[in-house]
Image 1 (cartoon, rainbow, N blue to C red):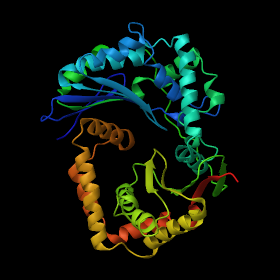
Image 2: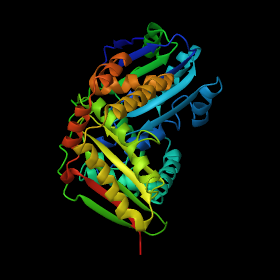
Image 3: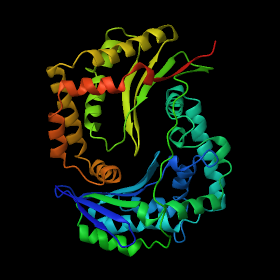
Length: 410
């Protein structure tokens, strides 16, 4: 199955993929803006605006927004990331016009009621408090902050309490005018969809009046000054560890190799980290690796939760597993098993129209193209043990690692 693309005169891009064996659709409106477009003073504004767009438009109150699709069996939601904000719906294919209508309304016609701004600040402040009071969440915030110091990529998507309390109606409306413009918007639909109908509805309901944006520029990422960061935690019986390295952007041709490497480390119960740290030594309940990609960089991290007395041993074992991949090529048998896991995960994921809709957007946003799944599988098949070892040698140099530890305050 291929995809169809239309770029409107105002710069808005429309992508669709017809899946003829389903009768549902997933619709996403993706805006090229996130927390990295903020500074220390307005950190959290992209996330706050995302929340506020559900609080009322010129023609709908917040209940009517929530009820509109739910009354016909659909749903609407949203999320904000470091570089992207997305509003998405899931419904029966017959409800395509209603989905586009609702998404266009909240994005173009939100009124940011003052009473709702006041209430939503409390909600976001509670969200921040929840993260700050949960070490297994807070450590990821601190790890990324230490990985990208003095840079907006290191800021929390939710913001901080000092910045959030300052947000006003004008903050929201100015943010919308600057970033929610056609040139930054991609609409993706996957499911039982006719592309021409989709274009017709987008033209009908999306009627932007805002000007062009400046060319997107990225602030240079500073060097890392402090590689080891230890924080005391007032409560809890565990020590939480995050260690990892910066990698490369989404469009790097080594991305699939890194996905394979990550799967070797943490691709399930048979993976190296799980088997050698949890199963063999029994010193960590939760142990896994994770990766993320951006326009100009990326990272791989490893997380573990263990007892205070086992924390040094746990970190030592993690480093040992990393060194093993650097020094010894992965066997053909293990690599073959890993490839099967990764390919299976990719293919099974594409049984969801929401996953397909997500993939359409991310591929286009980051590489300006949509790789066919057969081409992805072919590239994975061509990866050899020497490719994995070389990548590990490039990334896993001891001086490149940043480590964050949360431990119980004594």
